Length: 498
Image (cartoon, rainbow, N blue to C red; front, side, top):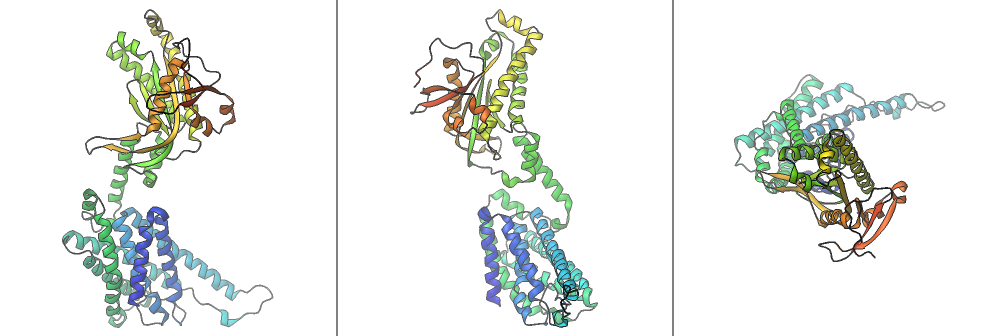
């Protein structure tokens, strides 16, 4: 049996190791199956369910189910140590749901055994007599106490004796939790308890069999963590598992961190989604397929030359407000403001279906927004002053390109930004610069054109030839859309087009 416990524990560690492929849900499913099996293998011949600890001298099948309690408890510590307190609480809820639904299923089976289908005779030998609500409640309370005791004991020993190998606090916590399990179940269900029912020797053996491989796996995983995260594992309160105050503080800090990083770039809905499910956000660098929008404000150099810095800043703020509105409406992210230039991304930090359609619609909205800003400036008399300097109004040029980039945090601990890096960004900027000599306000690459799904957008595509752009050896096939006003500062003849 010792070997079976060791192998079961190793299997649980392997499932967690595959989290990047299977997700944490796979581990929850395994723990749920082990918990459900306790009600089958641990059922005594007398008909009543065995206690959760299952280290009672009832039935030879209990020797099989004895394997599972220490493995389940170790799985709980694994989630607590290597994931989070929040995930550990979720596991408690998951186990409680297994108890509840198992009881409902047993009730259904028991009812059908006593109420056969019409025309079928009663068969006393098929009576189940399985359902014992008192035993189920006693077992659930004992199991819950197990979880609290094993976490509090483990964390207390780790805090007080940090130099101890993790196997020692885990072993002590595991044995103590199984002792509490037997004490609670015996007291609640039978109203009494005897030392013989404690079965301390089997608990010590199973504690070693489950604790040693699990602690070895914990130590291995912890060494792979950054030093700052390692410190956090040894600075928790032993009773944090039952305290919601700390969890609220963690959630608030997580929300503030995400809002600080992304609140300037994406819509509040995206911030809320990232906060609720941080697994959707891989910081530190990951490859993504995105569509990049690069926009530049026409006439900015002339304005900044003649206007005061305060007037220029006020104008840029009004312009950037419209940029944000256009991009966020189409579920994109304004990644950076570069002087009067704008870099926006569609498809990061969250996946976005039909991202090229969203990016192109955002570009069209931005062109309309700038036209609306010109109308406001005309009513304020600003455009009249600009005309004396040879400037008819503001305009915007937009370049769009799609492809693979690397996104993630760039910088150091003092200053860090969410960056988008790759040739796609450079190409989008080059297409924006190509708008002026081609006399267009919008250019998109053939990659973006091929990705468009909306028939209305595809119908407006107009080829503008193949062009050399700085930084690329191959020419880029570009398109614009019909119905857009031309770029007023276009040269008489466009550059080479295929």
